[in-house]
Length: 161
Image 1 (cartoon, helix red, strand yellow):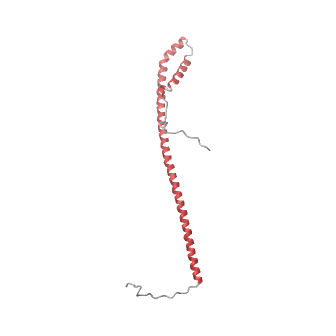
Image 2 (cartoon, helix red, strand yellow; image 1 turned 90 degrees about the vertical axis):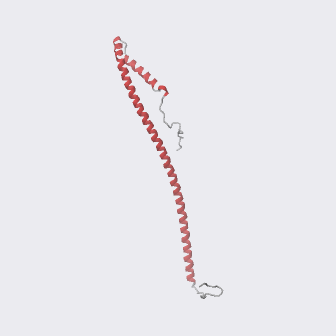
Image 3 (tube, helix red, strand yellow; image 1 turned 90 degrees about the horizontal axis):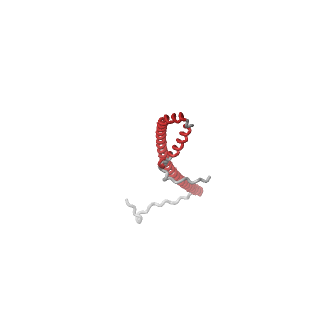
């Protein structure tokens, strides 16, 4: 049934007298509860701050890892390029040594004739000539090894320690 305030009245309970010690205890309990709520609120704020700092630290570390991966890929590229350049140089060295052996074999009869004719120290003359040739051919056609990233990277700045 609906309660009509105008016609129905609720029975009034007479107020009880509460001892002062009970009121003090109740106020102490409320005060302790409020203090605990304040402490917990402060702890939550500290935890939120720490969480934000850790998230920022994780973001920085993730950026550093991404940069390290990029640098690693560049180093891998450099290693691959230098490995191929070394293999090419070794192959060219083998070809030049074979060519030198063929030329020396072709010159051997002439050397013997020159020695028989008294031309002097023909071996030292050949050695000097081969040094001149190797120096002139080391930069043949302007070729010099270059890394593919030569123009992509800025020079390192000196660090202050």
